[in-house]
Each structure stands twice: as structure tokens, then as C-alpha cells.
Length: 397
Image 1 (cartoon, rainbow, N blue to C red):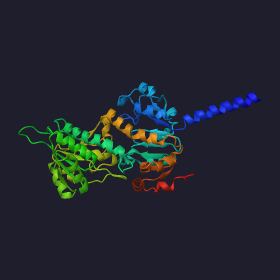
Image 2: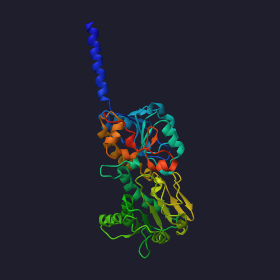
Image 3: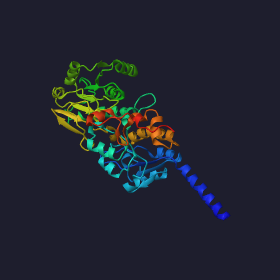
Image 4: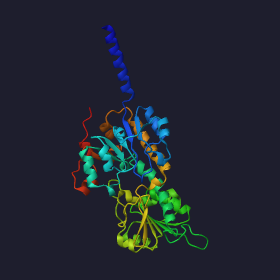
């Protein structure tokens, strides 16, 4: 009898110890669709998180396009899944592509999905499928830092700004463009780059464009942002507020126009009409970095890395929502650098609901919470009831 009691005691102690070590969440990273190349956690970040008690599972070959093999993930503590049914047992699904109906087929009720949202291409069918499964949806691009900035947007904006100029310069070549060198040469004037917006994308784009020798003109309705650019870059820039007359005149002269306007809540403002695009030069190029939020050109529609551009009214449009996917290793490291400290901060927090509210800024990224729409833009767009997130949270015990 005493032996049985002693054995039971030892077994119970061993189970409690295992639970203590594995109390943090189970994170699953699925294989992305063909057009997405980024991965949200790189192997070195996985090593840190698994040491903190997380279970991290990655679908086989999910990191391959970013240059990370299954073996690297396995050696750093991740479990490699060879079936979606195994992966989708996770508490949190973490991915660098927007939610899809394919996701919803595999997800279980009340799972958390952390991903980009891309409101411009989100459908009511998808939102309803997520509501039906009571998914907690968090949009990476709307997550805020303690200082009120958007960390994922900020870091990928640095990449996107430089990439937008390089992509525009490539499209200015004779295939498919007019055959104009961005920086010009002796005796030949440089191309003109017009940038809409004065945030981080604009800052990186300006540095790249000036570095290549282009003329630059920046428009934004926030004069303080324009002043900030002048101070940061340490040189005078040609700038203006976004009034229709100045905008129209600058678009007529532009060789490349970069749309870099970010919305804090929902869709990017549409500032360039189709008529304005029709007045642009034949062979000029639009790079709409804002397309992940619906775009700021009336003629923009999302494109893919496989078919990245199209021509409308004689103007070449490049509108790939995940422009940083052209540089997957750099982008993956950047995203991982933002997400891994958040999970480190969450280590030991048992309740995901409480963590959302307590981790400053994360709540701003929640657009769906267990069947309720908590993003005002989605509510208005699809005619769905809006509920403030704090009203849905359970009371603190």
C-alpha cells in the first residue's frame, strides 16, 4: 500500500514538472502559397523561444524560399510537420501571408492567427469563415509598439522604400518601359521620382533615389512629416502638401510615382484618380507600396511576384502587396526580430486574452475576436456590427 502511494506521488510530481516546462504556447508556421517567400521566425529565434518553453512546429519546406532548411529548424528546436492536421493543433498559427479559406479549413475554434491582413483584398466570405470558427485574428501591420509606432510596418517599410525605387528603375528599362536610366548621365537629365507620403517608406525611397541620382519630389498632407524628412536627410527637398493641382502637375512630369501612404486603421486613402493617371507620361511607372491596404491609386489592383506589373492608360503599374518577398531572407530576419521579443515577453502568461490586453499595442492589431468584429474599417466595409475589443475581454481574476 505504501509502495503504491509512493509511486503515485512520484508520478504526479513528474507530470507537474513536465507541465511547468511546457506551459507556454504551441506555435505553428504553415507552408505559404507559391507567391509568398517569407517566414515569420528564423531558426535562431526558434532556438530562443523553445528554450523559453514554447513548442514551435514548422510545416516541411516552409522556410525553404527564405533560405532556411527543415534541418536548420530541427537543429534549433523546432518540430517539422509533414501534414497540416499535425501543424494546426497549435495554439497560435503564425504566417507571413494573409488569412485564406484554406487556413480556415484546417483551423480549430478559438485559435489565434497572427498574419498580415491586406484589407484591400479581404473578402466577406473569409471574414465570415473566421467568425464562424471564432478565430482571434491579429493583423501584423496594425500591431503597435510602446511608442505608438507600427513595428512590422516600420521595418518592412525600410525594405519596401528601397525596393520600390529599385523596382521602378528596373521597369524604366526598355522592357517594359521607355528606356530611361534613373540617374541620368553627363549631359542627360535624371528621371523624376514623385513620392506620395512622408513616412518610413518615403524616407528609404528618397535615400535610394537620391543615391542613384534621381530628382525627387515628395507630397504629404502632414507638414511636420515633410519637415522631419528635411531634418533627417540633412538636405533641402522639393516638397508640397497633397493639393489636387500640385499633385496633378507633378504626376504629369513624373517618370516614377511611388505610393507610400499608410493608414493606422483600415484602407489607405485613394489620392490619385484614374483621370490623373490618364494624364501621366506614356511609359511612366507607378509603384503602389500601399496596395496591401487597398492602394492609393484608383487604377491599382494587387499583382503577384510571378506577374508583378500590368499596363493601364500607357502607365506601368507595379502593385505587389508583399513587395518585401522579393528579398525573403532579409525580410524574414526583420519580421522575426520584431515577433520573437513579443513571445519572449509573453513567456509564462497562461491566458492569451490577458496577454493581448496587457502587452501594450498588440490589442490594436486584433480585428476579429471569437466571432466579433473589432476593426472599424472591416465593420463599415462589410456592414458588420463593431464591438470594442475591451468589452469582449474576460474580467481580470
